[in-house]
Image (tube, rainbow over all chains, first blue to last red; front, top):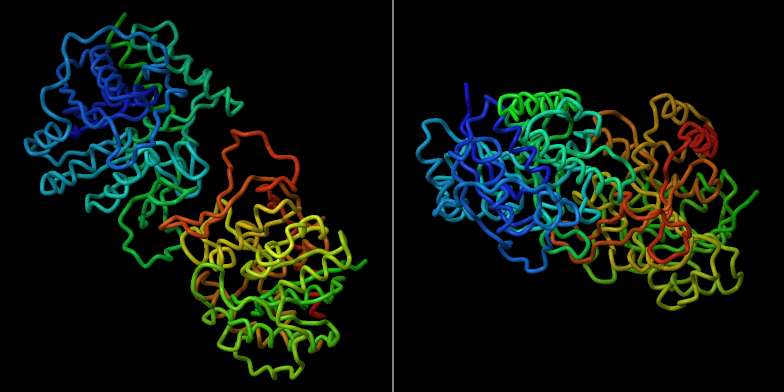
Length: 316
Length: 314
């Protein structure tokens, strides 16, 4: 049985692999992709989404452009040092035969959610600007979502962009705050689990000698690994966004605890930190399923195995 | 071997344990200075006198200090320490007078009088130390080192989701202390929460005929009640005694240096000690660099517990 999903994304290298995983997985029925500014600017993330879907023979999936800037903050900066200026780590993908959908991201999300017989799962892989806009503009539609599975934040492992903040939440903390308090069930796939969901270059061996998709994926991983090696000293790269998709495919791949999550929007040192009430001190209602453990081997097998299968289907 | 130290406290049940620990393990109390914190400062001052006198340390001067935090209202924690701060166990109060009521100035005076010799051990909110730093900018050069019970690095807080009580009760003072160019060991919840006393240790205290154990046992009951409610087992953790232990015997633990600062502006995280644990930057090498602190990496908990029990005669 295939579950209808929307992906909101800022591709982005790990986003690209996550989109490949979603397309490769029969458990998910990808109904639409919305782009957001984050890892790089909106112009690139939209174009990258279109080109990726073309690479995957999925020009049928509508792509709509969303927000380029955060709701409030004016000092957020893209992560081009991680993903390259254009977001694909220097990998050149063939242009898509189409442009973005004429609809806005919020409109596309609304249309997909309202027209689906089954409740839609929204997988959010970038800053949460579009998702917050959906919650604000179309609350009754958003309430029909099955769930939001988001990559972002951390409970015990707090930060990558700053010592206490993960990039997606840091980039638009106000949007994230709105999403955690939005009343839609949320699964938070944060650094606590994505830092364990790592791949080494050798893990990608099944893709070597493959077709065009495999070559693109390996090119992206080479860039991602080289950058990661530079500042962390190791070649085990966290597959942040793919893990969020994997958690939508197989929820039991992560172990979650239901906890209250808030976002620090005002801190000088802690802007964009997810404040996860692990000790249940706040007296606030626990409403977010926070992923605290991951079946890392199962995840790796799923990711690499599915991508190899898809590449074989797509051919040279 | 003895260590000359000034003990800044907000006595308090675990402060009491720390004083007893120090008395039995080589602390030479040059003075005790008292701050608001677990209880109002006049209560903490009285308790400090009471505990010292019980141990026969009737000549250790006690100086009352800050009555409130620098930039926020006073908040106390009688629900943890009892209305009288000593577990409401009916401990008779000392009638000794405090030696003074200007704790911060006394810290400065003592440091100036024996430059480079004193260890400051602070187990309450850091208001007195912060004030002392304001009075004497050279203070970091005038003391040997500083050991603070405070912070929660990489673990949840106890006063808020992210804030440990001592830092959370006076974040501005804490930031002055973290940023000062001295050798500062921050003994936080990331390590103190690993010091739960096992049932056999409690049994030894209960069964001991030593007057120190017989004093401590009834005072501890309130504290054990509190931890039993939160942890589900009858135990307690030894926050303040651990700071004392590591001031007296640094070899009980291994350490690492991190860059840290206190969040002062957050809506949900004011009072959080923010340390950079990402490993992206080179590890700092000099604990005296402003903003660099020591935190505990590993602790010999069994040895620490033995010294605690021996200080109680248990």
